[in-house]
Every structure is written in structure tokens, then in C-alpha cells.
Image 1 (cartoon, rainbow, N blue to C red):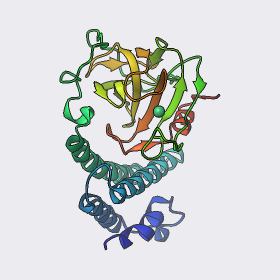
Image 2 (tube, rainbow, N blue to C red; image 1 turned 90 degrees about the vertical axis):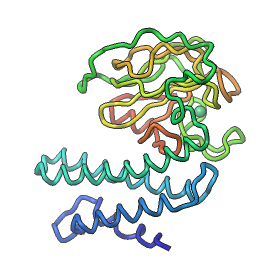
Image 3 (cartoon, rainbow, N blue to C red; image 1 turned 180 degrees about the vertical axis):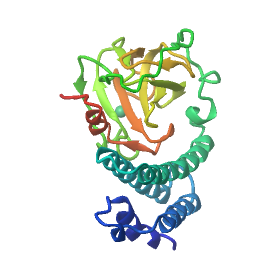
Length: 275
Ligand SMILES: [Zn+2]
């Protein structure tokens, strides 16, 4: 199997190199990434496949390592060429993951892949306003997705409600509680009708996506720009829920299977979310 590719190579290249010889030449790194993506593509697809899920998790971890490496290089004012090459590596990992998850999402009928505008679904609660044109400010102050909440199920929690581990952070709130965009971005999808109920997915300038699910009402439209703290809709209990709450997720791609731990991600944006 090609799996042997994974174990050793990335650590050497994604860790900040103390001396040039400690890092593999970038050509070899490219070979590693290509190998990983071939493996991802070759694993029997299907959201239910354990092998596929394992492989995507591994790829998400590799992406996060690559992103940390880019951040560190920037923090120490590394040369532009070095930063560009590290950023290219990060993007290559994400591109492979994106392709693999997109085809799985499309085959599974995930509305984010099939009809991101939500038009084909039944969205009786959606009252989208005209597209907003708020400027996408990179220096914006980020915020929590909801105010006055009780934290319920956390990221990676296990339970009978999830086929596998929980992929987001839940905020228990009454139906009708306003839900806000955590940062500036563009609405990638507004969908309804699947297990996530009425949901909004926002793409942020750093390339990450945030998902806001189980809403009772959606106030934005696909393609609209949103500012940090702008209301996206109201919390509710549409889709598979046991009560009103916001399911908040941070993803590397728009699709399921690429989630990262949301609270540390928010902390990096100076947003503290506590119980
Ligand atoms: Zn949840």
C-alpha cells in the first residue's frame, strides 16, 4: 500500500526547519503531497467508509500542521519565497481534500455540494434579504457566533446522536436567538432539508469556512458579503436535533469531513468562548 508515504515524510517538512538540512527538499515534499492525495482518491469513497474517513482526518491534520508552519514563518518574518512555498504546500493539501470531499458530498446528496443556494430544497423558514455588499475587512474584530448561551455538546464528543464523533460545537439557546457571522466573509451556501436543517456556510478571507446549522430562519443569501458580527439568521431546531441549539463548525472546505476544533480556532482570532 502507498500508506507508508504518510508516516515519516510530513513531519520533517512541515515542522519549522531549524537548519536547511532538517527539512526535505520541496520537490520531495511535493511528491509526498501527491502521494497522499492519490491515496485519498484511491480509498473506497463514500461518507460511510472508515478508510476514507481516516484518510481525510489524516489530511486535515496535515493541513493544520502546514498552516501552523506558515503562521510561524510569518511571525518570524521569514523570507517571502519561503512563506510562499509553505503556503503553496498548505493549499495543495487542501485542494486534494476539497476534491475528494466534494465528490463524496455530491454522491451523498449533500445540499452544500448539490444546490448551495437551497433552491431545490424546501426552505419555508428562509427569508433571505437582498445580497449584502458589506466590505470584507481583514482587520475586522471577530466575535462569538451567539451571545448568552450554554455550551452543550463539544467538538469530538461521542454520543448516540452522531454516527461518529461530533464535528462542531453546540450552543444551547432558545429558538429565535440571533446568530452572527464570527468574522468577515462571503456566504458560500444557504441550504435546508438535510440533517443540519436550515444552515448557512460562510467563507472567510483566511480560507476557512464556518457553518451555522439548525436555524429557524436565514437572513442572508448565497454570494452575499457579511461583516463580523452581522446577523445570519435565528437559532432553531430544524434538521436532526433534540432541542433548539446552534451547531457551529469550522471547516477547511465547505464540505463535511474537513472540520477542525472550533474553540481553539476562535481563540486564535481572540474570541473566547466559555461555559
Ligand atoms: Zn452539533
